[in-house]
Image (cartoon, rainbow, N blue to C red; front, side):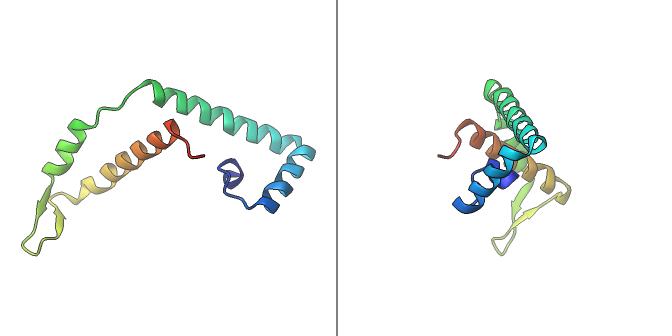
Length: 100
């Protein structure tokens, strides 16, 4: 269903799924609910601009360049939350400017 909603299905599979939606009220309701939820989330994030300056400053303060020019984290614990925040920002930017 996620591939259908994101338009990633090929033409034949898309047509087959749309035919299924015409016959299956439960799937149609689920698609409508997912679209509604996506719209609600998109509107929430579009209204609240995200200031990432402080996050970037903290991120770069945790990184040091080692002698062999590789990036190394002083505190590896920060890797996952920081990566999650940057990915969330990319998703929010994508929601504000959807692909055509």
